[in-house]
Length: 497
Image (cartoon, rainbow, N blue to C red):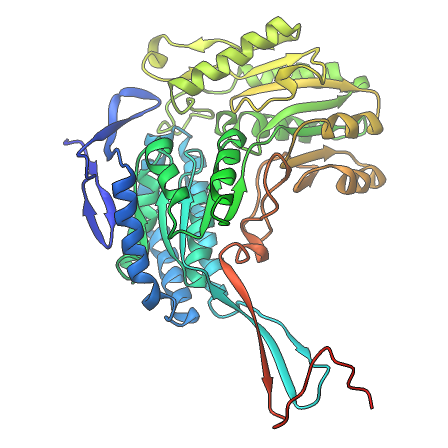
């Protein structure tokens, strides 16, 4: 079978990079398999994509919003019909097990349905005027070209969270997907084009951050940037965008706590911790990376977690029996192993895992064992820094007050969770946890697209993806006043006679 070559998608055409440079992407579970060859794009390619988006914008913005929504709804049907094939593509490029890859596609389907419905809603506000014979309302309008930089861990879901709301608002798009997982973006756009999206409305430029991402952020014709990735890179994106007063939406890292109180259902906790800490091999911004547990039940719970973690089936995500796949690439493997060694040096106790699996069926992939540390102090780096791998740090506390203080004492604030049967404790946590998302008796992962997604502190800059707030990044409010009095009426003037 020949290796597929993915060219940039610009103005409705597939074109090679201007430099002619390309790069390979290999299956992280088996490096002998080439997933595809992609364009190593630079500023010239970004300029071409932006020019195509700019040319398409005047026509697309005038397409009635309900019609734009209908295209998204048709794309949802195509995604559903191709879910199995797209799931396999996603597993081969990113590594997550098939059942998780299917969930990635399901999120995109849900977002296409949700955003498509906004084509017939897209509410504004009407209010009574302070003057007689005057009507006033607000409407949403598109902004222009939206530059999108998406990560590799949810390559279709996150692309859909950004792209589909932007499109239904009437914007055009240039997207640079994560270089480790770009096929899924092509699959999403394939469905949009077949559903009737005009040429140039969405453009794909593949490549790396410095050579393709930065020119997109800095391009003067791109007024909106939507970025998901590390906090370090997000800060740079924010700085570059601010120089041109761009609207920049950031969704960045997390160090998410799962609190377990002494009255919790430990059977339920066990399931939640395993899924939250080791789902997607811990490569989620919402992954459960800190287990903050009441001291009286810590030993019992940890024993159960260690027993279950050591029995997780690790392997190629295309194997239906696999529960945890590989890390995405060699750099990520090295990073996780360095943090595991750091945990040992800091004095934490390695209760299970910690090893690089590199023999037999694991010889050609980036596999690491699920890892659990105990005797972790809140000041340790493994308890404060985002690892983005299957590493769980267990911190013991004496009660709810200490648990909430430890949970909040990090620079991130994306997702947090508490397991308790005490409704008072649950409501205290709901209000006091410094996080954009809070779960009660559920792990820190599993956001749904019809509620806002995002965090506080170093996790984001105030914008929210998904849910009823998703249009705010991609549209401008316009206030409209209609005076039908036939006379000059002056607002904000003392009109009382």
